[in-house]
Image 1: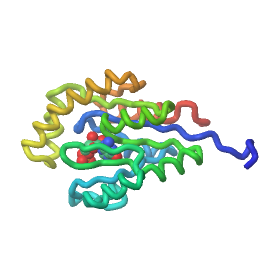
Image 2: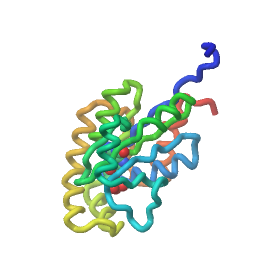
Image 3: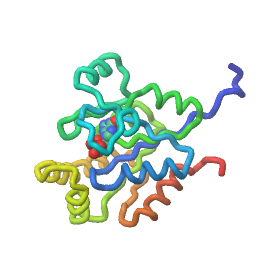
Length: 195
Ligand code: 5GP
């Protein structure tokens, strides 16, 4: 292929933050407002009634997930709250080759793996405005048991600390006001793109 035909590779954005920070809502809205692609993860966690297979996640059995690990099909994977989550590598690589911006909405353990493989990946940390607000959001979404909520709250502090220590999260967005937080994420996605 002639050099001039080669597209500039797309940007890889890694969005992390504690559950309840609102990162998945922000990412879903941001891809509607931009040309960025949201990577679909695989997981072994059970599908909720609101979720669609192949759209929200690829819902896999543990055996299927392990087969994909063995076949080296994940860019990263991690065990989060007792379930496996992983980013299928092939669609991400294809989009980047086509010059598209790709967003990975993943936990901090996974983000660390991506950063070690891809020096250009840009980290974005989404934070709740306060511990109290995080607890309120987790309780309000009525998805998790009390035990899970407590686990997620304890994990949140740990996750934020690891993210900060990694030094790889170039951007931090405090999700106090959804519209403002969304605009910040959209601006980061569009940075360096022709308008
Ligand atoms: P949930 O079960 O609430 O959808 O996600 C639980 C956690 O798993 C969230 O922090 C979410 O960002 C993370 N997660 C989702 N997909 C992936 C993935 O592909 N890899 C990793 N490492 N974490 C993921």
